[in-house]
Image (tube, rainbow, N blue to C red; front, top):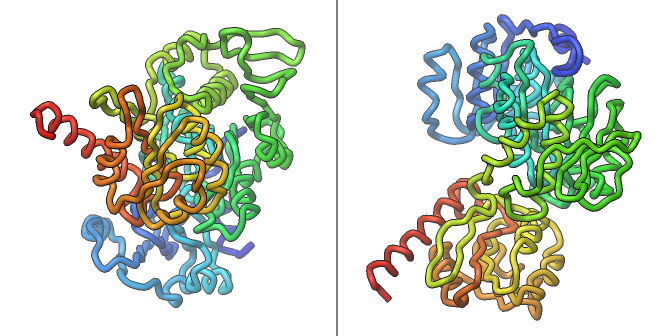
Length: 476
């Protein structure tokens, strides 16, 4: 560890005593990437007296002038190796691949390189709950926050969703719980980040457009446990052998949850209730299944994980129940949109990997038309054949991966290409019959056609809305 990092090293965030605040006064810090996390990191560093330079490859940046007003220098265009190598600290936005030559050169020069989430954790005073996994992170993170809110507990919710963690430091305090959705991109760039409660929901193939292998992706996820201590907790899905294996690396106390696997202790379904099971076998009911308003068994697993965290944080059962009853799901996650001539439209644009799309498909009965495609991130499309065939499904394929879906699903489902999402929605309606469902579950990233999955989902809903208007107007 370099002298600079020794200067700033202190106890990890969460669990036990709060860490000492870092002193970055006068330190020359380069923030790489000026998306929302990078901008939040720059603002945080400037507030703590650092000399901040933001570098972004774009030619134009809307946030440039507000940052300059804070004393932050902004450099647009290709990242310069000399700029990074001459820094006292480099902070990466999550969307910045860490193996770029200028970043590697900075490391070789002895410059500490950390991610935005790691940076923010240096100033957090309350415990951190970090939620990771291939799918379900946003649902689980949001539900934990709502349970804490119903219990009257001070909490922030964000990270990979909502406000970046750097933007939440101003709200920190010893009694504030920071609930953080943590992606593999964020976790691969940590150093001392230590959650009091680390949650691993599941693990399947994803982000092979960024990580060099499945093993590297899994190793990034496993870092959520890296700095935990015996007084911390790891909440892990016992239905997922790979997740359980990764949890074997933690020094924390492991709490399991499961829908299928038999549990001697942990959170499971007992009868018609989500329950906490003590090691001695005593069952403590938490939330009735009738209170859960989320569609899809995979989303029920997220409820179990949230209940486990809430129980560990001392949230009373009535608060858990109120939060679950009021939670109908997130936008772009199995979101009902509209019905046209008896055909239901559902938006699951957040299903950006193969396993998430498979779980979405399995949530519906036969009579399904699925819009899939985009920028492929890896995974086995062949795993979609059986659930599609069992539901007599048709597929409308869009984006860069159109041909991949046609090849992988041949013989299992009818696959038709579409040049745009608008065309795909109309073609899907033409393929559907009354009583069927049109499901947007892309199994791919959106970046070939849209800014992100949210823009893709909104575009899907807008096109469905146009179809509804046409039908109401009596247009063909």
